[in-house]
Length: 425
Image (tube, rainbow, N blue to C red):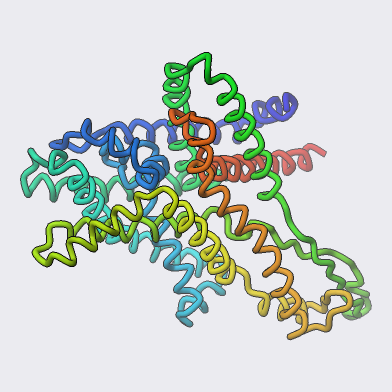
């Protein structure tokens, strides 16, 4: 570890890139504490402390949602736009052909994603402001005029575009993924306050509970690292063939299939699914139609029930894990590419049989990854009542994101150091 740090410090360009990325993360943290004028942000504290879904969304925004800051939406609209285009690439032939054009096609898709982020930010900003205003019984926007409300939506939209730009600047330095690092910074920034609240609430009679809490946290981190890095290696052999006067191929390698192929995307999907019904129900609470108002209240009460919330969350995460993996993993394309390159899986015939084999293996691997993501998602609901430690919520989703971002960043830095080792050699 010390040797790696010394290598980083000696490599001037990497050192400057790290300082540059840290400076941009500081800018993000400053923006997260700039509130929108004309709102009573103090009325939001109690709402976020008592709602797990809003608390998780606030965590992703780095506390910007709770502070009602100009970056209150975080990079959520950009992530939503990215997911939409990942789905559209699968069903729109023109986008699918564009994706196969290499770097140019990817740049065009990224440009479309940025454009879609703006209207999504406007819609989400409008929805969140109205939702939070209703949760505070109108106290949040009590002093806001129509023009101030319009200005607030413009500001939160601009804040999202600003964060999207910061994320791309960070990505260009090849010190991790910019969007992921912004989410990572928001999660890490909440830890000091959580630690302080935990220490203030510390009681000598709860020592055992704190020990259990720490053990669960350590086990969770270890499990996440193991699952994140876990993969099934499918052996692949390439037949020997002649190209001119040279013999090519004849090598054995492997095709890695990751246990957690979908990453944290299924949890983000699930949060959206869970947030939509109670959010829509909020708009019909004051309806003149009695049955519609009663149904809206029943929906809100149902999703506030921790048992139903946990079970529904767990099932939706598993379902979306299978769904998203089927979108990003294409056994037919892999089988086709292997056949074109003269590769085959020992004991499996090329073509359709290889596709069926890969699909069968991946389906079994996904089960472990889906159950793991489901447990990670509902972990705070189980741990808080078990340990009694509520001042520092053990968010499995947060730990999953932090671990994944750290691993990805370390790998990118290691890759740059390896390049310099070869240059020195």
